[in-house]
Amino acid sequence: MERKKTQVAIIGAGPSGLLLSLLLNKQGIDTVILERVTGDYVLGRIRAGVLEQGFAKLVREAGAAHNMDTLGEVHHGVEFAIDDKRVPIELTELTGESVIVYGQVDITRDMMEEREKRGIEAVYEASNVQPHDVKSDNPYITYEKDGVEYKLECDYIAGCDGFHGVSRKTIPDDVKTEYEKVYPFGWLGLMSDTPPINEELIYSKTKRGFALASMRSKTRSRYYLQVPLSDTVEDWSDERFWEELKKRMPKDAVKNLVTGKSIEKSIVPTRSFICEPLQYGNLFLVGDAGHIVPPTGAKGLNLAASDVATLYKIMTRVYKEGDKKCIEQYSPIALRRIWNGVRFSWWMTDLLHNFGDEKDFYEQRMETSELEFFLNSEAGKKVIAEQYVGLPYEDLK
Ligand code: FAD
Ligand code: DHB
Image 1 (tube, rainbow, N blue to C red):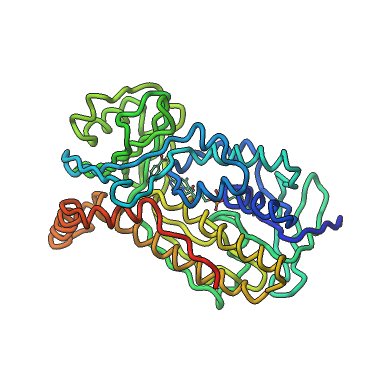
Image 2 (cartoon, rainbow, N blue to C red):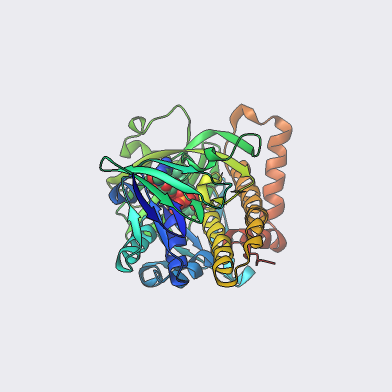
């Protein structure tokens, strides 16, 4: 077995792992990233598109923000549409903040290139990645690459390996509590090289189900439809998708809809999942490895970024000041913000989707009343706006 050594071993080269490695590198802290698949495979996964300013600031600090700041679009508002009635939420007017529309694929590519430029080590196509002795002062990871077995010794392990990764499984069942809510529908996404239907995103609730109009640029659109979990991508030709979208977007917006050939289509299940705690010995769960939210509200990637921010501050203090005690702060600080994001995503998902028979008459009236309450008052819209642009990051004590 070949032996290697680093300070912080990172499992997973998704946005969490890459961002953490770039930030730690800026502080002179050594990392090695182990990723199960190829870089191209990582870039093939089309996911989020809305970045909070907190995330954007971190990417700048990490030195990978050039494209985001030149190609990303700053959005000062977002729209809700309820049965054809459009309600603008003026994010900047209400909060002084904005969001950046820039794809997860693009930000991941930018960070991959920066990592390579700075010579930070990443091992792609590493198999059988397994953390060991994470409660001890000498944790290590074993993995295989090109038929050779490796032992990577380290001080800390950052589990940035997504929902299906190995890190969370390393925490014994009697130590962790997992909270889960699975929704009875999925999101069918379609990407096309067509101009977006509207300058701002539209989250639209209709009797036929929820739809979202988003974008990646002035010439690339991203749309989503709520679909039954039993549907497959094959059930949805482009034509069928566009016809359904027309029925679910506000009529005066549909006038601007340009349809075209899809360049990607996929179905995402919707669920909330939270693991507590997020730290076990010298192992930390970061991003989707520790929590998932349904996509309504665009919080998944942004919560991953706030985890990274907290772990980055902790690791910096550990290595610069020798204060190991502060690692206990990771889980409570990260979880406070995560539960806020979970709550907002749950609220948006609950109010904007069609739950069919799952909601009784009383619950349906509550839904209507809740939407009217929030969307007809400045105070209500401000509450939505504050959460959409993202709550502030908490500092270490
Ligand atoms: P990931 O992006 O999942 O990265 C984890 C990495 O770890 C992967 O590259 C994986 O290959 C690697 N890995 C896994 N297991 C191992 C192992 N054993 N060894 C080594 N490496 C391993 N959020 C939004 O805000 N809006 C959206 O529209 C949206 N759409 C989504 C669609 C899908 C299908 C999914 C799954 C998520 C979506 N999200 C969305 C959530 C958002 O994309 C995630 O929150 C974000 O990707 C989290 O980043 P991460 O780096 O923590 O995890
Ligand atoms: C996108 C995805 C979301 O879940 C969301 O709330 C907003 C935008 C997107 O992929 O563009």
